[in-house]
Image: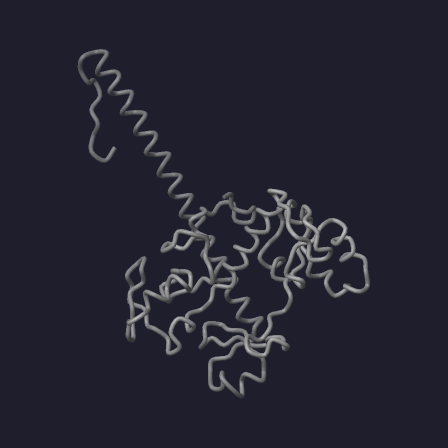
Length: 261
């Protein structure tokens, strides 16, 4: 699987859970900043009291009061994975059932409001018909993916506003940080989430984007360092190969390798 253009410098493993070795499913972020699929973490937390060790770095992590649901859901990783899957569908020219006409056709766009794919004709209908005028800002066309200019911010803007996880008829104005950044509405602040750490959705989203961007920059730098180290190793190997060949030819080694050279 090739990485999408905005993250082409990031290895595929960045998008994979180190437990199941598959793409993340409902990624949960631990305090040590390692993330794992929610279904993969559940059996690890089973029977643990108070704390548990991260499966990767072995750091001791405190278990939230509401167990696995208390760990933050990595929404930006979910956004990147969604883009990967959309790009793969478009690039492979997959045949899907169009949400508009219910026919199996090659997909041309994806409507985040309909939460499904569109064929050419239904994409044009979405773009021009007044009946679905409120869908236009939520449609991602194939040409936008091929343009290689899609960013996390642009992808987020295409999506329909988050809905409260309890009262799905209401948009979520807040995120409950106590419950792993669950989207909640004002009504929830007087009920299940009363007294919890509630933050504005926009502020939480901005902070998470900045955190992710910083992590991506660190990963790119690490890749550059690894590439530089690989070049040095290849250079030394080439020198050693040359020395060995010269030794075999002349019967003795005329060049000494000093430690640390």
